[in-house]
Length: 391
Image (cartoon, rainbow, N blue to C red):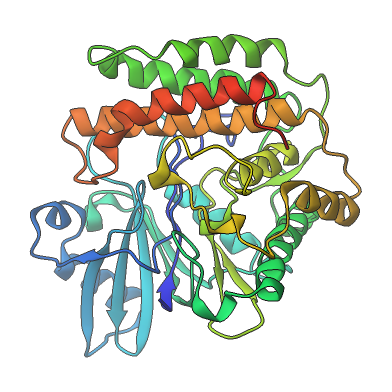
């Protein structure tokens, strides 16, 4: 299932609190096993006017004899368009159409951090340009080069189906997260990229507000009492202090790409819209919440969690934590809080997806599933809180 890809995800806030976590996406990277729609599709027509996009790229990059554009459907949040412009294969990232939460879908924030990290050890696609002129596509957007390889979603590539490559996948994943958290923000022009002090408390408050935004519409369909219980628990258990680094905000296995060869080589990290300066342990907890072991209960929402990491050879969550601690010098404390917060955030994304579905602002088949999926995620939060889902 080798493909070219970039990620999808969602936004951060645009205010002075930038980066504390606005509406977000589940971040399924565009590539791998996702399908595409042609440009004659009605929904795609809301995303792109091919002639306007071509004219803009011709003006910025020089005229090209060959041009083609198609929507890539693997993601569930920001929209991804694959573009052929002459001999270049590009990716355009733009928000979905329709109303969104106030701080959602800030694609230019994603561009800013990816552009700043181009010359660091963090593997990334090459950024090409950003566009604030909404007359081109009806929204801000940015362009980057496509990257070849595999995004591991529902299944592992055949070439990795053995214990040693599987172990290396986990090691590459956590080593790259360690590299992100080791970047000196000031050295790459990101010293003012967020407000790390008090970040974790604001995360809880911010995601609670995203639930409120979604519940304003979805509560007419059903209530989710487990989420309200989790909100109260999180507010009572916010760590008093935390480390401060650059954070990705949506770091997990299907937001990175492995190159087409062997052994596994992580060649790209996607979905940077939630990146900021803040608490790196929120990244680690998020990654761990998607990392499955054989002893785990069935996924709360099977469509949002792969299960192949439970196979022989993949590192355990505890082994990933130990490797991370050794690489960064940070100690992963308050595990129940960070993994509960991660699942709580995923539920908030799902509830916002459900609102967008009810309002007719997406054709994504995942969105209506959140009517039952978010309550199931709420129950998973309570299991982690109660110690039933251990590290």
